[in-house]
Amino acid sequence: MGCWPQPPRSEPDKVRIAGLDVAPGQTYREAFAAYREHWEWVEDRARHHGVRALVELHFGSMTPSASAARRLLEGLDPAYVGVIHDIGNLVIEGWEEPAHGLDLLGEYLAHVHVKNCAFHLAGVDSDGTLRWEPKWVPLREGRANLAELFRALFSVGYDGWVTPEDFSTLVPPAERTSANLEYVRSLASAAGYRLG
Image (cartoon, rainbow, N blue to C red; front, side, top):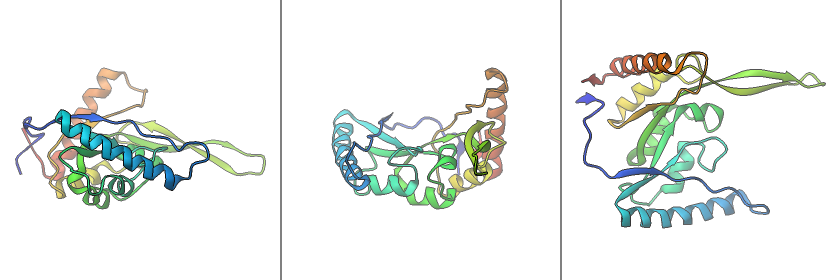
């Protein structure tokens, strides 16, 4: 394995494509079928413009999991369409073990976002039911095991970009960015990547 991150390769520019919502009166299956048709068009446009169009694993979307994204893109050309894996979003909806999800994405894995999330008690209903809500937390503190993610990335041979998205706000941005870079480098090194 070479150094991580790899030097820039000559690959197409990447662009994230926003999702479609389920329209009023439409079933999820109908919406997903329409979304698939949308992505067939997107693939054609991406090929025409020489870019790679990406869908992100995101809660509240039609692709909250690697399984859903793979189903959406299956049969389309991975040179022109791909997936942004986002473990922080998966904590909220769509959780799959990192090794399984990354393996399933295969050639569609195009980019990785790294953030973390934890659930916090938001209140108690009058009948005693506890209500939990997600909250962005520093990379080291949430539900997602980032060391496991990096081991899984290494095991599938991923050598692309990893972008920290730390939406926690307890630490000033410059200090948070520096600490996150150090942490991500330590995770990559421990997973087996040789750092340049």
